[in-house]
Structure formats: C-alpha cells, structure tokens
Image (tube, rainbow, N blue to C red; front, side, top):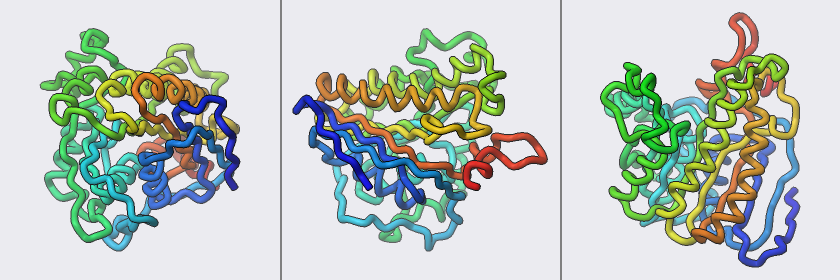
Length: 315
C-alpha cells in the first residue's frame, strides 16, 4: 500500500522513501532504476514499513535479473559510491542500471580497491555479472573513494601514510567528482551505497561521542557531500539515490554505535536535499529502505559464537 502526499510546492523535487516488505536483489534493482527515472511529479510517496529480511542470493547465472518493464537508460551515466564486491546492494543496483543500458562507474573504498579490481580482472565476479540478455556487465571505471573526506586537505597524514592507501590519491569526494567530470562530463545518476560505524557492535548506551559522530559522518553526511560535489556535474532531471534502513524508525538490536541515528539523519537529509538540490540543479533525491540483507559486511556485525546482527534482523 502506498500513500501519496501532495507537495505544497509545484517545483519541489520528488521525494520517495521506499520501504520494501519482501526485499530481494531483483526488487532492489527494479526500484533503483525506477527511482533513477522520471519521478517528476510533486508528490512524496511513503510505503508502510514492514519487518522482513533476505539472505544474499546464490551466485548462479540463472539468477540474472529481468526488468519488469522496458526501461532504456542508453546514453545515461551513473556513479555508484560504495561497491567493493558482488554480494551487496551496490552491485545489484549497478547490474540493474547496466541492464537498462547505462554506463556504470563506481567508487570503492581505497583499502579494498586492489582486491576488488583483481577480483574483476580474474573473473571472480563473472557469474554475478551476467545481465538479463546474457551479456556481461561492464564497469566502465573504478575510482578510489573515501567518503569521509570532502577535499584533499581533509585527509590526515596518518591516512596518507597508511600502507592500505599506498600509491593512491585523489580519493576525497570533491576530487572524485572532478575526475568523473573530466572523464564523462555531466552524469545522470548518483547512488550512495555505503555506511560505516566503527562502534556498530556497541549498544547506544555504550557508544562514544567519537564513534557516534564517525557513524554519522560516513553514513549520512557522506550523502550530503556527494550531492554537494556531484550536483553541479549532473544533468537536469538526474537522480540521486541513497539506501536507508528501518532501524531509523524501529529498534533493531545489534545495530548500534549510532548507526540507527545515522539512518534517521539520512532520511531527514534526503527530504531537505530534494528541496534544495531540486531548485539548485534540477535533480531528484530519493532513498530506499531495503531491509536486512545478509551481505559480507552485515554478516561481520556481531560477537563470535552468537548470531550476527543480520541473522537476528532476518529472524
């Protein structure tokens, strides 16, 4: 069931908070592409929340998605921030956009960039790259991206000298936006598919101020910064999309460290960004609340010998 609420402003960018009852990677793919298209009416749509969860889809060629409708994104360019393997929502959205004909570029966290690139080159993700017509998804370019840094000046010496960042530069949000502009000019679709909370395993009562603020920085403000820096290089009518989680509204045990607060912040920012970026750049800003997915990252949250947070969420 979907409730439509008319916006008081006819020129307001459309805001969609899509909360999916029975999430599957295919549904997320379809939803992402639909939201990347012409949702141009001045309405806000909010689906009623449900508790549901899924485990990562099996890696089989038969699982290749088929879009529900004929959607053509040929000639459109997308940048997806936060893709580092083939098991998460970022990869699924990349496949959906590629399946619709878009040129797909991604931003990957520097410490795992080399592993991700080697996995692509070695064919490790070959089965997961098969599109609905049997062809193979091509990621046009992979950019190093650390979304907690807005500019090069924000990167501390400790990070620059860290061996996991060795040989890399230009990974702040503003630098990546400039690199994408140099390579592709204007883009059409921006996806925020990343989050991090260093104290996510701690309940809120035990979360430090620093851990709380770091979760907010990496998981919420990073989207604000992406829209700030990429908005000027997006074509009018373009779409920005983030991924939220029902912990913004309900208590999800195990999802701690300020992450639930960060998701609530992300949803609030989406509404404001839609209002502001719609006027400033003629683009739309939306979010999808996809439900728990047993990705590699989510599976790592929890104490050894006990169920992971994501298993509890799915149960």
